[in-house]
Image 1 (cartoon, rainbow over the protein chains, first blue to last red):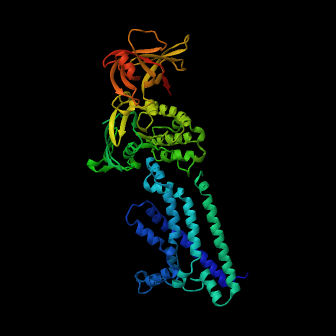
Image 2 (cartoon, chains in turn purple, blue):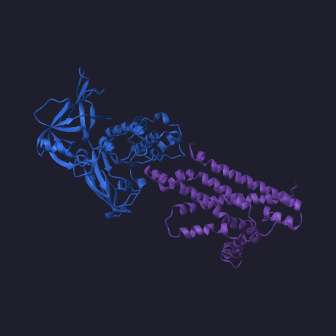
Image 3 (tube, each protein chain N blue to C red):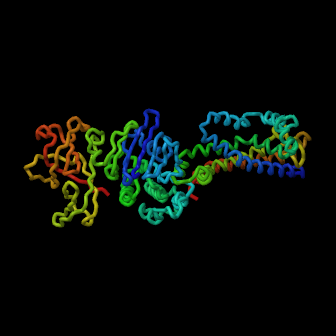
Length: 229
Length: 358
């Protein structure tokens, strides 16, 4: 299996994108998951549904609306231009923004489940031991939800690595900027370079398997993860 | 103002919890009642974990006063709370669990020392363990120590023994009795076990369907014939006594209490030491004054205060007054009529057996 310079560039770009997106998603997704797990607001259902949309939506639909929104006539596009940031479509930043929306449910849901599974009791115990709600969140809720965070990080990363439709719509196919692995495979197939496509495709297949294997192993080890130090 | 004042009104699914209580500023107050009578909810209202309407004041310190729109959140109330299941933090070791609350208390406000708490609950050897490695009784002792280490002004305990089997209960009860003896703070103790109440409580609040049926000194409430407690199969009174002397020849120990003295089989207690005893209603029989011969050693002159219905229609309850100490006897209606027992009559209470507590 021989990988070209372009292939390596696509791999590097993909890993970079997935890493940045995963970190940002954990930061953005945690408060959303906390709110969804603990709020009794009537808006809970609506927000939950919106967050989960990318699970059922064709990526092209999400990509299309993002393209319109972030384009020169879209609200977000005009906003970013006013800020002097330029337009987001066909840039790496645009890809990051799109990937965050696209992978959001895969991070929010495991964390939300972990927060819900721990129940009120540990938080109540912490309150009776004089810990403020903020301190309780960091010293009790986050550590107890650790298995959920591991699952969320793995799923968020893997899902971003595997995206294609959204990138196609708003990222284009610019080498070193937006050409990720899935795009590169598409290019190879278009050019009838099946051997090259195989190299990358097999890589993704192996990657996905290892990720799921890790996930199921971590899932099985959940009890030991929560216990002791 | 000293004492614990709790006024609380909170509509629940099946009834409205309504309590307006003034409780002693130290010692153990038991909140007693059947499951689902609102005991735990009342405790949660005192802790601020549930939001009832009313007022909570602990020995002069106000935690909630809806008249002034004042509500202190739980983490700013100086309380200790022991939940039914131990609720130790699974991600922390025993030591880190104990330190969790302690490290938030300024050194100057620490009244319960680290060593004292470990010694009181007997958990010094468990410090470096993970919480998974502990037995149910050990967990609950760690949870109690963790609560004590925050130097609370009020200790709330929600059926701390309910999740334990009989053996673990007996393992932990002596620790609770030591708490009772050594702590100068009020304790609210939720229980549905008459035995625990008799052993631990100084003051008793009886709840049913969210309403307070009775609130008073344990001895009084336990012997009130209009309350369901006296009708319980295990109905008993607790008597606080002191060791007067030992009779080496007959291997007996003589205990003195407000109403007289009582002899029990020889106990390894020093003369002068306090001894709490439990006398069950079924172990007390009644004889007429005059004939003094009986195999029963403990025969105390008593006045009949009143009669009540027992659980079985053949039996009735007799409330007795032994020179100021209340006592309960369960006898048959047949005996009552044959002996011609009436209110105000002087009789002899024969105590067949006595259980030494702790």
